[in-house]
Image 1 (tube, rainbow, N blue to C red):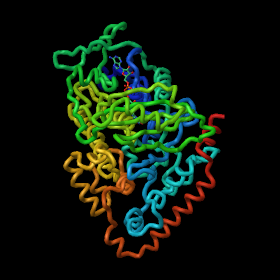
Image 2: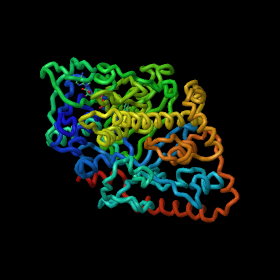
Image 3: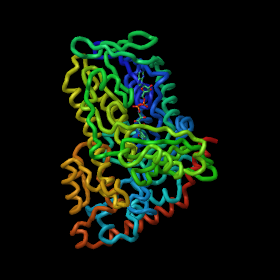
Image 4: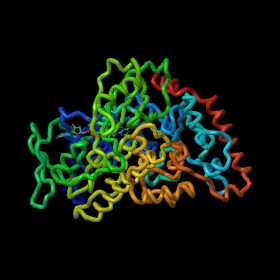
Length: 521
Ligand code: FAD
């Protein structure tokens, strides 16, 4: 233990969580801490987390990594939105874009849209990004210049802020898709280069001292490994936090029943087919299918509830959805642990990643949880006295993020108009947290705003809730009476400006494929 506090860190697990944590802590503290990362050569990583939140840019910024360097190495592409396909009815789609919602005379544009928007689609009328997604455009010009986002605060300049400090200030116009295994490899090289000791071995035992704190871990071939602070990145196994320290896991499954997935990695001719600049979530009979376009292949998978669908049926549905390209591709069946650990930090052990908590990847929140946890760990890094208040504040922040996202996902299912199978019928009556039940009633009277969504930071601003409610179509919404009584000239002008801007950008920006072909040339 150093004079400042724990300076010997042992990370167990070499998936996205392990390597993101190792590289971030090295970037933060350099050689003032020593880090050992132990990962099993036999137990694989989950390997499917490939779509992100726009805030992930602060992670790469913190590590001083440039897109031109890491993106080609990870077959990465841009993500402007999540496209929800068939959630309202077959053939219907809408986008949840990375774009702040404009307001006119103190009311969000969606309020004016409900009162008499120019078209049928709120996403196209209120956001520029929906048109760019439909047209398959890159958010950057071929010379790398970022599209002229109306939000003047959006620039390429590093902000020096963490993502939670950034919340509400600006909305960067895109996130990334990347190959999970390649990103872990890239970050591993970054971390090892900066002095992280990498051990490939299996942790067989975790020994506690008389207080119940971790004293050391026992590996198969490298014997005992000791540290001050242990970080559990062992995925759904939760080897340190859940197993050794016996922290219980709190399931969210009453609200979110999807507990299984089957995934495929399908190589495609992107030159011929193009690369979509968004993640797609396509509703199915007992869940939904994700499609994540990378440079050279798609990652796709069916997330379903096993109470409504067998693994065989899910795999068959997924293969039919993808088509002949999937024929020779092996399927990966995954059981998901949905919920969170009661505490993510106990004694001298902090869980980051799937060991801490997870919800189905409908809004790509897994890597966001990891990023958030690491930022909080740096913020609340323990001192020599291990003040329990620091740990409590960390645990509260992590729990709020996951509980908030749980609510946000529950809103998707409650508000989806689709009701053609038992799964979708049951989605309308499944229990949700009491506070959400009340919020849903309020949103029928007034669109969501910062005063009436989940009250703690969870990465999702009010406009995200509006997109889901307006897009899913199953909950009656109305505009504020004041909007109906007001002159709407300024709002109509704003709609026109958005349409003009979208047309200009669709004409001027390169296709998403062309942008990456150029970057890689
Ligand atoms: P894992 O990848 O499971 O890694 C666990 C590590 O621990 C491995 O290195 C393993 O070897 C090691 N380990 C385990 N036991 C031991 C032991 N005894 N000794 C030594 N080492 C051990 N997130 C997103 O942000 N976007 C998405 O689109 C997305 N899609 C997903 C789809 C599905 C179906 C699932 C299940 C998850 C998805 N996620 C997504 C979440 C994302 O995949 C994870 O958050 C992310 O990969 C982090 O995983 P991890 O590192 O915690 O665990």
